[in-house]
Length: 100
Image 1: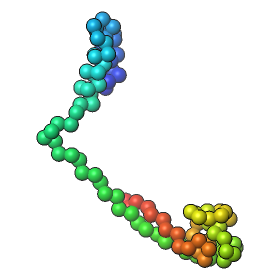
Image 2: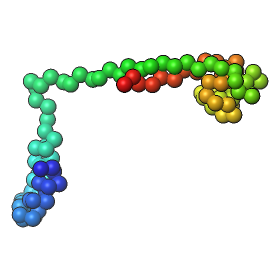
Image 3: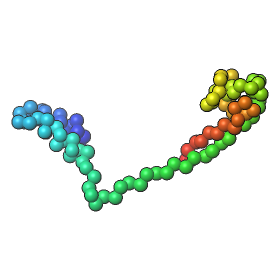
Image 4: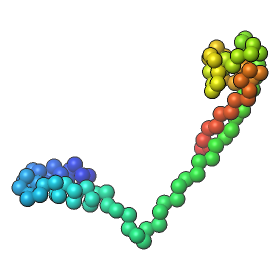
């Protein structure tokens, strides 16, 4: 039973409405539902994400080699070219994707 179901059952039973400290009832429900970590529990290990690295460096764009980076990436002045296709002006572009 989730928190909302518990709260609704208390409201319909009249316990929440008639409680001396209704906010305390709500806090008890929330703490029971979400609970605190016990001291003897081991923390969960964080998963390390590994990445595939792909480098793109072509001069296949019509606007390549004009002295302005035009591939839409960081430091570019326009996005006339596809990413990684203005290598002479933008340098090698790197894309990292998570390994599956």
